[in-house]
Image (tube, rainbow, N blue to C red):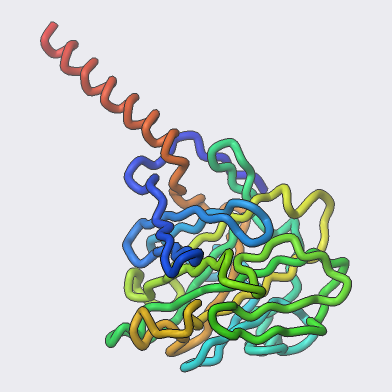
Length: 283
C-alpha cells in the first residue's frame, strides 16, 4: 500500500523539536497540528505529527499492541505469544504479531516512510493529560517472538529490550547515556478522547528492507530523561491503555506536513496566484 502526497501543507512545516537538558531533545506535540523531525539513536531521521481526530473504529485501523500500567511508566511490544511486560491480553486480538505488508508506505519529501498511529488514553486536569514517550524499538523477525532481555529505565536513560534472533533496525533513544535521547511529549486533551488518535510516527521504509516479515515494535511511556517530573504529574500513564495501530487499506490519508523547503515553494505558488488574479481583475 503506497500513498504519495503531492501538495505540501504550509502551516505546520516548521519542526517542533526543541533541544533541552544538554544533549536531550524534546519533540513537542502538545499543540494542535504540531510536527517534529528527529534523529534516532539507530535508524536515522524520523517524523512525528500530532493529528486531529482520526477515525479509529472497525474498518479504519488495525491495532497491534495495547500497553497499560497506570499510574506508572509502562512498556510493552506486540506479540501473539503471551502478555509480556505491560501488554494487555492478546485474547482480544488487539495485541498480536504484525506483518510488514500490513504497514502503509507514505512518501514525504521524496522519501518513503512506514506509518504508525498512536492513540493514548489519559486523565484530564492537573497536567494528567501530558504523556512522555521516550523509547521505541523496531525489530525484524521470521515469526512472533518474546524478549529474552530487558534493561530497565534508570534516568537519564530509557528502558531497552533484546528480542532473540530478531534484527534491531530502529532505536529512538540510547540506553547507554544521555548523548542521544529523544522524548516525545503528547497531550491527550487535544482530541476528543480515547479512540480518536493522537500521533502519527513515520520511520524510513528502507530500514525494513523487502519481502514480508514480522515487525516487532517496543515502546516505553512515562519516564523523564533527567528523572524529574518536568511536565507536572502527568508525564506517567494516568488512565487506560496506549494503543499502536496501522491504517487499513482504503482509509483516507491524513494531511501530512512536508519539509519546510517544499512548504515555502507551495507558499510562493500561492502568492503568485494571488498576484495573477489581481492583475486579471485590473485588466
